[in-house]
Length: 455
Image 1 (tube, rainbow, N blue to C red):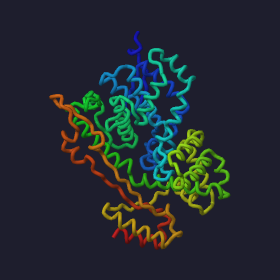
Image 2 (cartoon, rainbow, N blue to C red):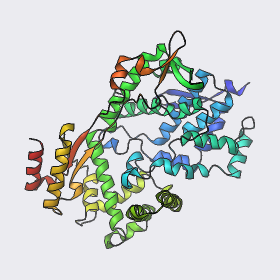
Image 3 (cartoon, rainbow, N blue to C red):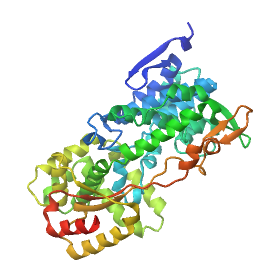
Image 4 (tube, rainbow, N blue to C red):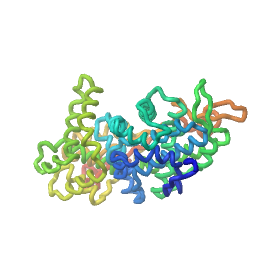
């Protein structure tokens, strides 16, 4: 019997029974079974989202499997050749392999998110680019062997680099990619909300290859306009209500300020001597040195690459458990140090107070906040009173729009065929609030400041 008629099934709460042909299973399994990919089981998809939505304990591992599955579904629908389907499915499977503990939250450990998870990705991918891995992989996949050239294409798709066939790159990373199609449904399901739901099956049914400037691109027929409107509104609502939920962001801000405080003191504060010996402690110490020297670096990119190379061995071993083990240890320390104080808040889920702000008030609040901190510093520390701003866009028109083909086969950008998407396209929305430590709120000066802000 042909292997394309035999399926490997994975039960999934979002997509039901995800069926992979035996060929697809053989393409993916060597990567799935690797230690670097298994590590994603221990990195939660939504950072500290489960402190707000208790069901949100799903991981990057779950999401990457779902992403690879959707990539395969798209590939079947638009008729990709087997070899191309193999490449996009592997790329989608590995697209998040560079994530650190608590996903995007960990990136805030570095000034201005100078080191994002994508920066670590080439180091993880290099562990597959070996003679032994290729040999074992090709023994299992004699019809579609993995070569250095093919693996370079996979890496280029993940890292958004040329030269890659644009149609394949669209499946891996675009405003209509397999990543977003999975995470909206998955995050919505595990958070217990309906914001992220849309008709994935109709979306897939509407997908076609379209011609754009003599290049093949992933697009939709005019019958898919309704579902893509639903999908983009789902993304907008998930962003506003889940990803940028104020208390989720506030707790993640607490966590990062804890890690930064720990990093700044770990080398010279005696109670932290034991923590310094851990992988996380070593990494934080090195991250602190990196943050202190980036402004003086003559070649910032080279400085960054040196840090990545020298600290990859520790980084790849880190997961959520490492961070929470340190949080628990700090919470039990009877010391009045910021890292320990924040750890106590997180360990006992002592939620901060949120003061929502109007966008128009932000410049005024910033000025007031700066003056207040100068006047009362160090009585009120940065972690006890923080302004958090998160500008965001639901859909970008100028930056690679979703393409629609009408009944006559004419290809036009989505915003020209949808009044609703035209209305939200390229519109910057804002979420802004003050995060206030509730225990510190007993300070009278802080209370008066808050009263002045919310007049």
